[in-house]
Image (cartoon, rainbow, N blue to C red; front, side, top):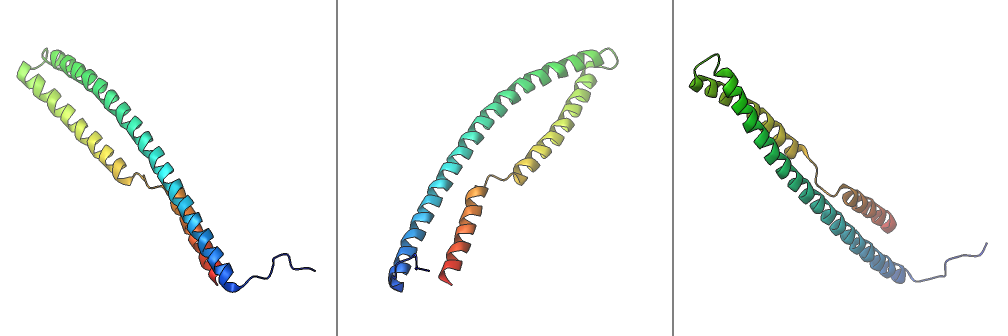
Length: 130
């Protein structure tokens, strides 16, 4: 069976491997930039939506708190009604804030596909050098 690959010196093969490996890593860097740019746009849109939604919920919460104070004024003194509502809203706020901070800490914004691909490419390059 004829040899498909032409006979080439080992130095030529290593030169080509080095050139191809460098090109591969440049492509991986371009992929990482594109992926990070996409994640940044996604995070920006999400942040804007969170801000608008949060503002609207804040207005609704203020209205609801005022309604609760007015309702409690029929049962207790006005100052006590306001204090009860403020403490209840504050406790709920602490719980929600803690949950949000926990979600941000555990969120993964790293370019996972790119990192996996770089790991695979590094493994492949090491195998080629053996």
